[in-house]
Image (cartoon, rainbow, N blue to C red; front, side):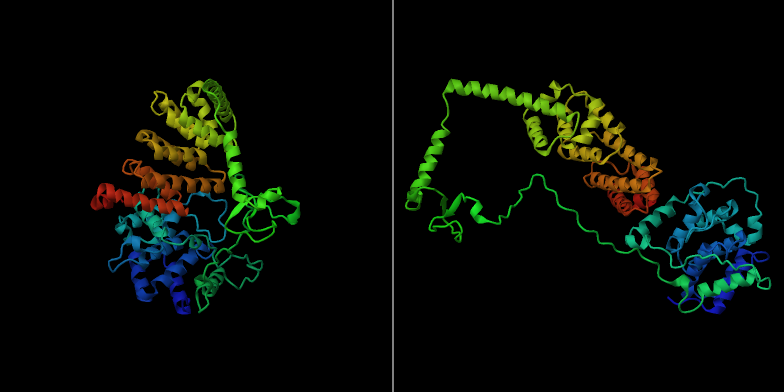
Length: 504
């Protein structure tokens, strides 16, 4: 995109400096005389670039004019405030707090606003600041405001989240193409005034065909990671022999005399006897009869005793496995065996003295077994205490997996699901010191909530306020934006188009 002309830069700089005598209405009239509607995006990008450069707009009155012009760029011709592409920048300026900022000199960082500036911008965003247009920026800065009046901008924030959900993730992770570099020689030339230096910086930043402020942002490099080695504990491993003579084949071609000949469709057991090559069918039948004779059943009395003793031994083994599962993770074979045993005999849970205090450990170490145990306990009176233990335990992937799988095999009380959803949202918000861990947990919670919503297991209408606040709070996460779209779609189905539009 081409930059502004030198005349446009001078006109824009003149407007930013007209904060003493001219009112906002007069500034708006002068702005529309200097710039046409087709240059709206270009002028808006230039103003946003000047706001990010703190030394070019150090005066709060200049910032007020810049903020007003960002609002004024797309004002008129039936356009609403939600159609303004610079709305995310304005909302960021309103929500930014000093305790969340390590320093103001970060690359691409927006400036900190005073209470008077936020008051003016909040009134303009809400559409209640028409009476402020008759005042000058100097008068707004001089207002005595002990604290910022409450402003409700949730409808605009929801609109921004929905708009940004349509953008690719790479568009929200790019770095600006302009990086501030301090000038070590600044101030040495006394004849070179600070105002002249700022004007020259504006011209070099915004003017020309290759203006830096209008350059494309720097996207992150696409790093193709090497895939990890596949580890399959229960998969068959093929062994490729180097010397075929070291191995004795179990089957050879019936019409071949060597184990290395090409295989055919008819195979027979390999025999060391000479007669095996002459009559393979007899050998097979003989082998089958011998095997069947070895598998002949014992007498009736002996069989009953063996079955009884074997059943007791199996129960004891399964009971030991369940006790082991309550103290640590089981191997895959042991876990599968115990799951089949629980499906066949639900008394194992009573015999092991299961309690709600043991449930969190079981969920973390053996989630699939925890699902079977909870399924057995569903008809009992104690199930409410186990649900309470699930809600009170630390949020984890295994915990969400257990709840999700449990909802697919049995009807779970909606009250418990509502409590668990609130617990998930609260756990994500409480993580402050580790952004990576927080984002990872937010993504998993979004997938979990989307599954519950798609399967109609929770009422979006009852949890709408919590879900909306969660999606807005983590709008930078792609999965949160997708969850917000799902919530809006389901809400329209539940409440009807007109009522859903009123809730937005």
